[in-house]
Image (spheres, rainbow, N blue to C red):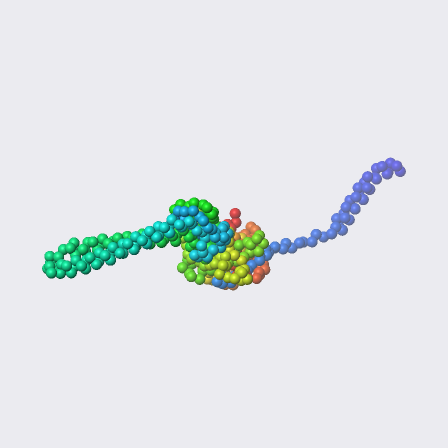
Length: 402
């Protein structure tokens, strides 16, 4: 029996394994065939709508007075009086007295000039009388034989010249007396003062500096490319200046566009625009009406109204690469389109040609883009008009996808 088991047991075990394997193969689950689905890319698109877009060209500059003057002594002398208004930071009116120089010697010169003038007039009157007497005395002589010297004509002309000379000296003496009084040449702000009571000044010596407060002038640099967007001949070009006030609030002023300096600066290669602000310190208003002054020396940013673009389309800059955009046609297929970029800022590009109303522009650039790819579109609301907040940049700076 043991011999039988040892001889046939391996065969039995093998048959059992073969039977079990056959049962497993017969009862295995059937493999289900899977259908491969094609993934269709989804693109966010915008329907093109042409519109007239307004622009601002941004710049910056420092506020300076349109008029400023050095107060210079026209006569020499000792300062014997100073006005309290003649101090740094004080506002003065045109013609207001700022300082007095010692005028005693100049009054003496004036009195002497007046006496010389009176003497010259008296001598002229005497000479005129002598000429009348000489003419009567020589009346019996033929006119052709009467000499100018005998009629005292040269003597009269000499006295007339003496009168003019004395008159000019008198006028100079009067001016010198007036020049001992230093007055403000215009409404302004005293920014420098170089004299005190007792100071001796000479002719041509600077006494101080005054800035005119009637008009502030700002030079605004722009690139030649940005300047091409501005109409320099338009009297209605608006300029808005902005300045941070005390590190918190921003104040705004409307400036008057004057024009340009007419040249391109050889150092910076910029065109300088000239704008004016009337009454920057609001001196013409009452204290209650003053809302905020524009101080000389303040740094301001400016927005200059540029020429609008008709029939333009605004797109985000990243949508454009190499002056091309991705469109989705009526069949849901993508295609490339060359466009004309009129101008850009740091956020948007403004298309002047190449797109038509109603066309769908992709707002994203597809990865691994292929022409004619079928896509699913998600319509985005159209872009509304905004004022670009930053300086216009040359169109060649549009993102080239690098």
